[in-house]
Structure formats: C-alpha cells, structure tokens
Length: 176
Ligand code: 3AM
Image 1 (tube, rainbow, N blue to C red):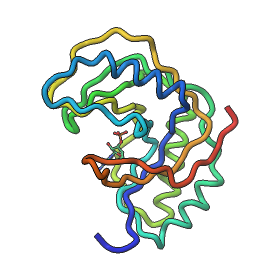
Image 2: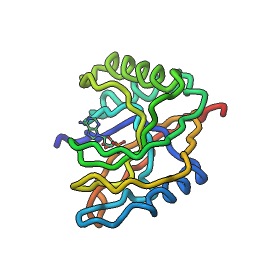
Image 3: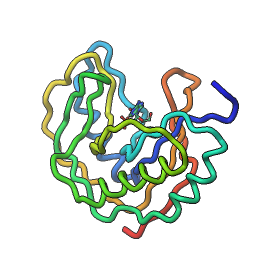
Image 4: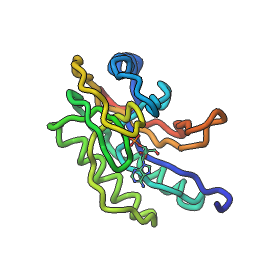
C-alpha cells in the first residue's frame, strides 16, 4: 500500500438511540458458530464506499462534500436480511425516502469528479449487524428508525484485536 492512501467511505453515523436500537436486534441473534457481531462503535449506514483514496484526492473530496445538503427524512429498517456474497446479516428497508439515494448518487458524482474510479453498485441502505457463514434465524423486532441529517467520511483501519475499526474523519451535521 502506498503512503498516504486510506480506505474510505461516506456513511450515516448513528446517534445513541439508533445505536442502542441496532444493539437490541443484535442481542436477538442466535450465537451460531462463526457469527461475529459488529462492534457497537462501528455501526453505520454506508452511503458510498470509496476504497483506497490517495492523500492528493482527499482535500478536494472534503471540500466538495461540504457543499452537499445532507439527506432529510428517516430510514425505517424493518427486515433482517442475509447477503450471501459478503456473508453479512444486516438490517434492510424496502422503501426509503429518495433523498438518501440522491445523496449517495451526488457523493458518487463528486467522488468521480475528484478522480476516483468507483464500481457501479447502487445504494442499498443497510446496517451490517454481523458477519456469519450462514443465514441467521428469523427474529421479530421493532423497526429501527434512523434519521437522515448529517453524514460523514469514515476510514476503515485494522483493529489491534482483529477485524476493523472505523474512524470518522469528518462529520457534516444536518438539520434533522
Ligand atoms: O458494513 P457495510 O457493508 O455497510 O462492507 C463494507 C463496509 O460497509 C463496505 O464498506 C464499508 C466499510 O468497509 N465495503 C467494503 N468493500 C467494499 C466494496 N468493494 C464495500 N462496499 C462496496 N464495495
């Protein structure tokens, strides 16, 4: 890895009530072999994964993101899904206010304008609750509400105890 290169993503970070609501759902997951819960401080909703970003691109990206209005409204996570590719159990929502996908799309445009090459994955709101080799058992839970408003740029770093830790580099506060 070259010097000054960081693994980055734009995300919504939870307030304490949202984090606790996610932890309540996590506490319902049956502890299967190989299931690894997300660290509470790592819980987030990815808006746009950037991958490795050189320091030469970072300040332009930060300036451009500062001008972006954060998404207004609320996400209602009412389903527990299993994604077989990355082997994650995550909270998902079928319907969500268009402002969230619009913010994700605008972040993608400004990242590309900053010279980053991104894949064509669309925005799928989700909160990764656990990594697990097989689908979790079904659970009943109260929907997790997650307000829009501010968003942030986070860095993915190795955790000294294994796995990753996410560090918020910059937070742009919102109105709601
Ligand atoms: O926990 P989630 O899925 O929201 O899965 C990774 C994590 O988000 C995702 O980016 C977040 C920080 O690492 N991620 C990692 N590699 C990715 C990739 N190649 C990716 N998302 C899309 N494409």
